Image 1: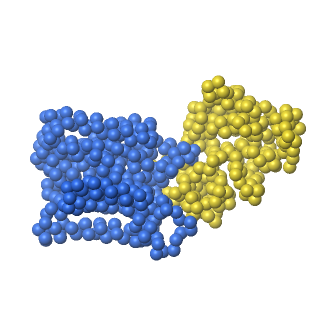
Image 2: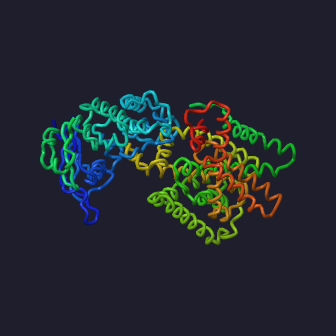
Image 3: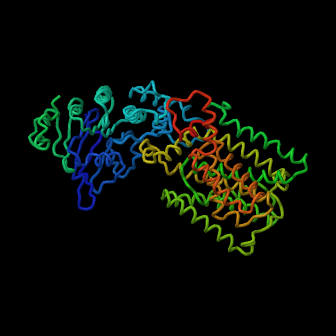
Length: 252
Length: 334
């Protein structure tokens, strides 16, 4: 195993407030790495710096051996670093298939074609249909995104990330707001994606995290407290102190 | 691609077919006014369709497209002033001037969005307007007559009939192209950007490049409309590039249905048609016109094209969970 994504002393400040505090994180190729931490720990801020939507004040982000700190999100996406959003953000006017095909096209080539329909791009369409099938939306491929239910929209979010045939998936709370059944379906889906992709998962659902993750990093007030296997994290005194009252941390 | 003739498309297609025959009818009835009037309608429909690429597909509210209409007009007027009638030179001047000005103003404007984008495009258009007004040797405020029409291999745009023919063909070609463009990768990227700009970047597409291209394409096409207008009027004047013309073009697109295939054409026919009819009835036509526009605006953002699509949809089985504003998008699809 070698590191696919690495941050070195990553720091982000908003005025006096340090939101990401000297974070050095390593995600190995092929692992499912989870980030947990109490509300306001700066998890989404960290994700945004990894995806390229937010520029850090200091430190570096390396992806596949290259320093990508200065690269924007579109360039990182084309290198295979794809993300999904906590707040579902799909294209409502498009069908499921159109959403996924556009996402697939984005990492395959440019969109400067002015005549032939997007859905006639066989290569993009193939990747899109794979992503849709993997996310469990095959039956709804021709439905407009605006007509999907909440859980289905979250699945589409995943389908779009998968359609891009990523090397690395950044998943920002893929189970947020889902019903128990829907969450279980996503856990099963992530289980099937494990090993095929390197995944960094931010999630509040501790049961899901401890069931899925190979390694877990705990973020507190922007600082990386500890990284380790689920067992190490479960038995860590400091982590227990933070989740005080949640004695059941990761009891799965 | 479905090119079925649904109720939504039937009216605009019938209208276009009628317009194809109009010059012959006007000639037979000895009413040349109609040819000239509808030539103007076709030309503004081309300009509105051009604006639709930026505004309707890309969501770029440009309040400065009259600038490109004006550049197109002066691309005919200035060479003609020096006795150059070669239409290809006029086209080259138009494409070059609209292209260069489009790239420069677009590059700056696209660093902003929303209200700021509207204001900055307006500011650029006003700069162009006052530049032309200040050029006294070329008529300044009064504009300039165009002594020779554009001529292409002996085909002259000197008569309303010939302008009409070219405008008609150009509009049909543009409309067919927009129908394809809407679902082509370029159009889909623009439409995606209008819905959620941030998301477009995260699928790996650099939105601003596509928006700039759309803006420049839209500018050049608008310039071609200006060329035709100059030939039709045998006159170029700064008043055709005032900010009110930019506003009227936006109204035409919104009235007809933003982003739809036939919307700009329908909006232009409605706008200029109603204007002409009201003018004949009362000199306070603007007051009545305002109320009519208000009524269409209240009917929903899908415009006339949306209304037609909805009426077409009502007698066919409804699609699962189809919603109001989406009808124009899904219904007008070719």
